[in-house]
Every structure is written in C-alpha cells, then in structure tokens.
Image (cartoon, rainbow, N blue to C red; front, side):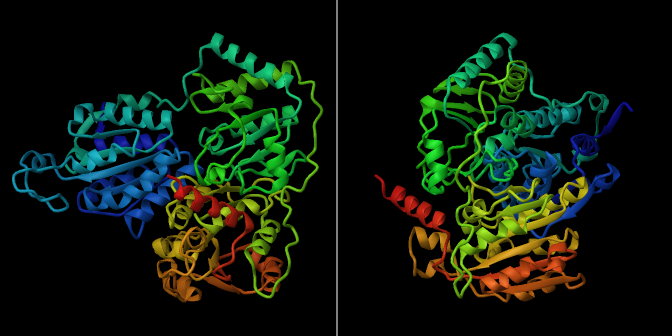
Length: 567
C-alpha cells in the first residue's frame, strides 16, 4: 500500500490509538468524510448537538485513553468549543476533526454557508485561530502530500501533552491520496526517558527526605490520573505504608479499603481529622498536585511548599525547587529504590474515621448529608461514577468507597461547566462497555445542570449502557445560592416532569423511574436487589430542600464568596 485517502489515513491512525467510536454531529462539509468511518472499522455514534458530542468525546477519552469528535466548519465547531476547552483544562486527549469547505471555495474567497460571510474577505481561518487557544496543536490539511505527516505531528503532540488537538479536513482533500508508509511507524505513545544521571540525583533527594521524615503522607491528586501513573501510585502506597489521601480530583483513583486511607483533602472543605493529619505532616508526597480553587476549598489548603514533594507530569518540585524530570519515570525509579532498600518505617493505620458522617440524623425529608453518607454502601466493585459540578461534585467525595475496591470516578473539577457530566457519561459508559471495564454506569447530577444537556439522555438510553442516574432536585442552583443570591430569581430553574424524561427520550426502550423523598425511601431503594442489578436505564429523582447542602459545601461556598470579595 503506497498511497491512501487522507480521511482514511486519519481514521486508521485513530484506530491504532485504540479509538473504536467517533462522536459528533453530521454536517454537509463532513458527510463524505463520515463514510470512511465504518470502512476503517470504527463506529459512528452521532449526538443531539455538538456540545454533547464534545463532552462525550471527553468522557470517552478519560476511560479509553483517546477520544474523537467530528463537527462541521463554523457553527458546528463553535458549539463544540466548550467541550474542547474543558478537555484542554483537564488534560484530556481529544481529537477535534472539522469538515471544511473545498480548497477551491477557500481560494476563491466565496461567501460560503457557515462562514462569517464577509464580501471578498473569505476568512476561512477565523475558527481555526480560535481553537489554537484551547488545543496543544492544530492543522488544516490543505496539501495531501504533507497530510500524513501533519496528522502524525498533531496526534503526537496530543499524546505528549495529554490535551486536545484540532484537525481541519477540506471536503475534497479528504478523498485525495497521501503517502501511507507512515502507518507502519508507531505514534509516540510513550514519553521519552529522563536523563539517567539527573533522574538518579532527584530520586536520591526524594529518598533522603523520606528517610528523614517522622510523619510522612501521600496525597493523590488529579494529575496522577491524567498523567497515567496510577499503577505506580498504588505501588508506592503499598511500598511505603504511609497514610494516604485523595483530593476531589483524585477521588476514585486509588482504593480506599486500606487501613492507611485517611480521607479526602480540600482545605477547609475537608473533615477536621483529615485536615489535621495532612497539615501536621513533615513530608508530603503530592502526586499530580492540581491547586485549583474548587480542588483546594478556594485556596484554603495549609500545606507548605517546604515540606512538599510536588510530582507533575514533566517536572518534580522539591521544597519549591523545580527539577525537569518526568513524573512517571521518577516514580518507577523510586519504587525500584524502595524495593532494593526498604524504608525503616512502620505502617501507621489511621486512627480517625475518614468519613465521620456515617450516621447523620434521620430527618423527615431526605438531606444531602444523609444521601452522601449512605450512597457509599450502594457502590460495588467495577462501578463507574460521574458527578456533576455543584453539590454533586462536592458531595460525592463524602461517600466512602472502602467497601468497593475498583470504583472509578471523575468530575470536571477545574473547568466546572455545568451539564458536562451528562454528556460525558455517554462517552465514558460507551468506552467502558467496549473495554468491558465497567459493571455499572452511574451518573450523579442536579436538575439545574441536567437542563443544559438533557438531550444526552437519548444517547444514554439508545446505546444501552444501562445507566443509573441519581438526580438531585433542589429547585434550582443550590451551590450558587450558597455563594450568593439565596432567594434570587436567577438561581431558580424551570420545573420539569423528570419522571417522564426517559420515556420521552427513549420510548422504545425499557426504563425505570424511582422517586425518593425521605431517608426511608432511600434506604429501601438502595437495598432493593432489582434496582442494584441495573438491568435497564433508570432515573432516581431525589427531592431535597433548596437550602440543604452538605456541611463541606457550605464551608467551601462561604470561602468562595469571601474570595470573590477580595480586592
């Protein structure tokens, strides 16, 4: 095979990266390109709109490793930009493929539909320029002779930086021939190694500080997930015996059933015993530290730079001094060092309850404290949980995972685009179904967020991932009420009949609806064997008071309001 269609080359490369499903919305500038998807052995799963498609590709990438979305030039790609921006912020590798007008139309500066329509100007690069700010690499394939090289350049950048990329494909160029020999050269899926001597120097420094510590701990953060070092992190936890903790972004990344697990850290939003244990430590190994506002209780964490070894994808900071070595290889070398020369450290089981709200008061109406404390016992090995921005993202860290070993979990902690979780659930659960790694698919969201991307329910149902949706109905935006405007009209949302949504979006499929108003309702449902089997898509509407929130949320939102008042 000497030559191959440009479009076929692109999809073959995605297939080599493990992509099986392509998300998106069909448009006339990409319709013929879409014909090449099944020819490459890939599956097209169209979405109700481009925003949901972008979120789905993000969710797919978080489970599969790489995701892909196809939109049309102009309105389609602009609608997808919010999804791509979130992936860029949270280091999720997504390929955004954009179908462009033909080369002749662009060179002729014709006023084409979906363009900005300026007479004689022919600005076909405006949207591409916008995307440069939310991707790590971009290209528009004008020349078929260099198309294969350009595709590889951009995809290699995506793999290196773990961020989205943009590939524009003119309608005619997709069906021109490009050299195929590059397909025999693997893409650069492995980071280049560190300098051996310098890496040894860094590892020796780290080991020396670990040996000198009397009260060391490990914190597992979002960068450990996105940096793909969880196997090394789990091995480090076991090799050291140190007490270990997670952040909101790190929740679900490591098992919580070891006696050394100490809880979830988020500054003042943490439980007191957890905060005390972390903030009194004399050596903190912080893996994948991501010090964003929502991840740190609005910058209220109290861990000094002097005691911190900060592990990042491309560098390590020791006491604030940066060393340009890649985290993955440093962790591997540190583990080898510990195996050869074990620590003189006796494992210390934590003496506090990581989730102290295990028995909150049983009030007449269901409360969030009761919900999150009891949801933990519902989780099973192999569950995958996606939590929405808002009280869901703040509340789910309060649910214990100590009874279920392999529960995966994520939320969009940093970008915080409400509605993300429902769209992302489509991609994540499809990927899990393809890989066979997810036993139950669980989405936790609020009714305000749901109303932004509810069309994704049609995808959740028709792809038969048997998702269970816990829907918090608290009559509006509770987190925003707690920050500002408790009774303001802008924090209300329209009233919907949530019990009818699944039938409306998937009338041909079996679905179930459950209404929960009291602690007794919740207890009965969580104990129900048929509900736990999750043999079809089901929605659980949880009726909550609009002023109710977990205590951690109240503390964190108060800090947000104070931070916003600073001058």
